[in-house]
Image (tube, rainbow, N blue to C red; front, side, top):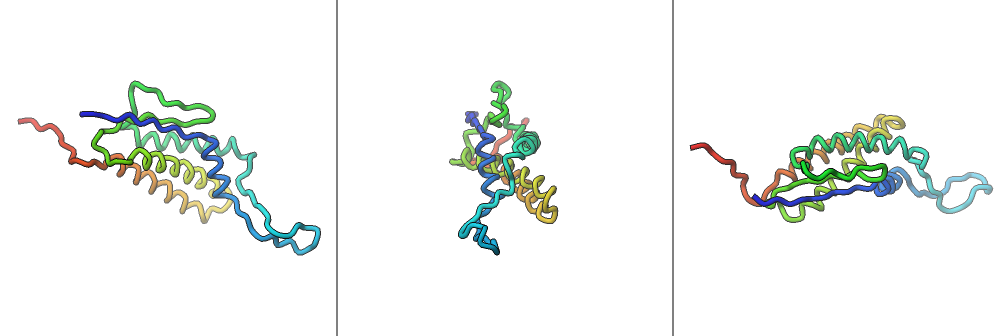
Length: 160
């Protein structure tokens, strides 16, 4: 049976940019006095000061995602995991659906983001945190389903 080796590298900077984007907004300035500037104002909710906190949550997410993909992890290749990257080396069957590699990477990336946002919301807006945990669990379930999807049926050997 032929296999495909899939290297997935997710950079912390890429995740932090996405987290900043999802936790910030641009709105019309509502300053009542004229000392405030007119027009648009930015509001960064997740700040640069929380980088270490977010990095710890990313490590927790990495461990949880590793549990989902553990059956497909390469035994010979060590994934690249450092201070600025998270890596997975997956050995997938050749019979997987075409384009699965990009979808798998996107699901893993979304799982990282939703896990960090879950913990961020737990500390600030607990009523919105459950949605992020549902997103995280959904991403893991979709990842499991995508890894098990094949173009041909799985055939297991049978004893005579």
